[in-house]
Length: 502
Image (cartoon, rainbow, N blue to C red; front, side, top):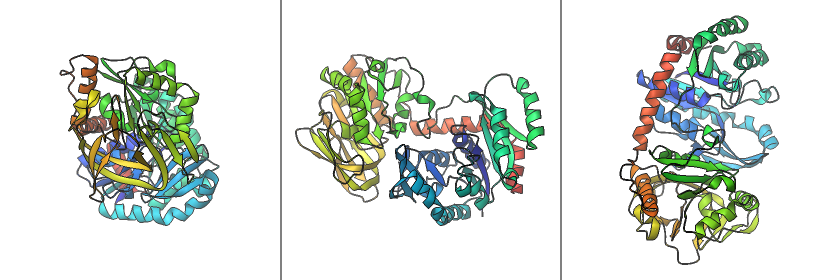
């Protein structure tokens, strides 16, 4: 069975996912068969495996760091919030149902056999498992039924590295306070402390590190720098949404709907020199983009109503009427139609009017479509013509079925990788286009074709704006991550912790 080590944090967004990914890469580089594991993940960024099963994207990124195919075994429970007090519960990649937070809290210990089945299977296949916790292990109101932090560490007999975020301030209080709130047996499992997101002169920090070790009785095994690397973010705490990025030669505005999901769809475009990708919430932030993107969402109807209420829908319609290019993905694609109907109460229930930019109607169904999709854009006319024939390789995750009610043509021809069925997807009419396929611009050809279409529409030469092989780019970023962590972490001590266990 594999040896295990677990990364926990003092809070959400302390950097657990990134550090776990970095350890996966280091162990992989050192010749060990390595896999990530997170028993329960709460995120709207999800991924579909080749078997058609759904998992969190953080573990996908970590699997890529480990040089292996993502598997739902790495994330047996995924919670996708539908509102502030409830989530869709996905177990072993399939929808179990939607539960209120209190109901799930009472139910979740029944899922321990599923968690351990997945964990034991991975453990038998690998040399090292890198576990990731969620939030903080010191949530004293939740500890009794914990299945993702110290509860998981105990089940896996995994020593724990505790990560604090110095960028938010109070890192010593974070680490000492967390350790102090742990039970004695839990505290004994914490074998190392990590200060994350540090920038500046480390010698100024050193006296604090000495005091931290003295007061906690736990060694500091690393001071990790604030890394400026491009890797996928787990959820809406991402720093991509912060600030107001300036418009570049080609400017893309992504509408930041309240329940935005799978915004990783836009990562390949962010990495093209001369292209700006701005996430905008209000009409005054829209400015004058070359393309407006409507992203995926966990609740299409409520997010559309939110855009209607804050004036963003009116602003989008105004830009569309002027000929501005509009592109929707998944839930954003559904919003572009004439009507959205929810007869089974999958989302909000009832029927609402869509934006009316594409002649189609969507009905939400009880069954979720989950599959990998490969194919290409069809022959398109008008401003999206440059996309014609561009290859795509992505996946579908949606509850709705969309039917055309007019003259729009399909946007793509794809093959369902799970079933093998060939089908047409999406719609394109004039300056408005959409698709159900997430990752539609992940291929270098598709991303380059979109930028070419925008350049042609704008009347500028974009031939020097070389697109990026996104898969190869990610590999370079993972290597940079590992290299920087090797400098910042005491890997000899971490290997010793791994070897000694608990």
